[in-house]
Length: 138
Image 1 (cartoon, rainbow, N blue to C red):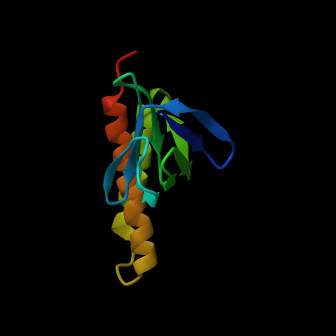
Image 2: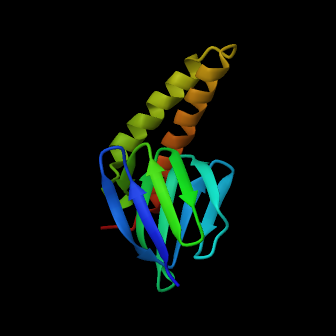
């Protein structure tokens, strides 16, 4: 029994197909979702969404954050921003990381919301740089 997967960006539905498994970057750790999984809604951190078919990763997408909703037969990934791993630009990823580091260094530690936002942006930017490094050579 396959798992119906939907990956949705703010602009459009990027992918809708049946897969064997999907691994999403939850805020508390990576989650492997198989058919029959318990119902779940989780927030996502910056990282890779790995799509498995026939025992191997067939697609990878980088998400900056968002949510995943899981039922027994479906997983919907609602991403803030999503990019195919192969389309990640190493220079842009490094620039985003430098910007996030600067913003984090300048944050007022007394402002919990600003701190959380800067921290999330830094985690996402570092994950993007790490995801570029994991991409297979073209």
